[in-house]
Picture: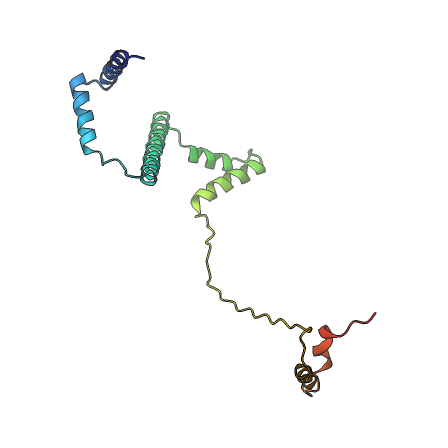
Length: 169
């Protein structure tokens, strides 16, 4: 596409935007210039740019949500329909099936009572593990005597030695 064609299409788009907003083309250009002057400087790094885009997306989503809620409120006001009152009437109607009444009451109670959220509590815990490795390849007679002295200790019982009993085949 040639630069002249791009300029021509851009001018047509500007005219259409000005007509949609019901303003003159000069006023459109003034608004754009004012908006560009008031805009914050462009972000220096990619992380800032991504964060700004996320914030802008959140704003647009919120605006759309508000617009949708405003349309719904307007339509409900025009028709005089209140969906909550209709649900309550349906739940109180004796001809309504009990399963439907339960669903309606559950739906309404979820809006009436605050829902509980799980909270993750991080507790600081400290642990000490000590491991003693004994090599019997380098066993000295003095060390063996110390073990035999421990075995002869009268305060120790046979139950304390059960896990260390010798296995014979």
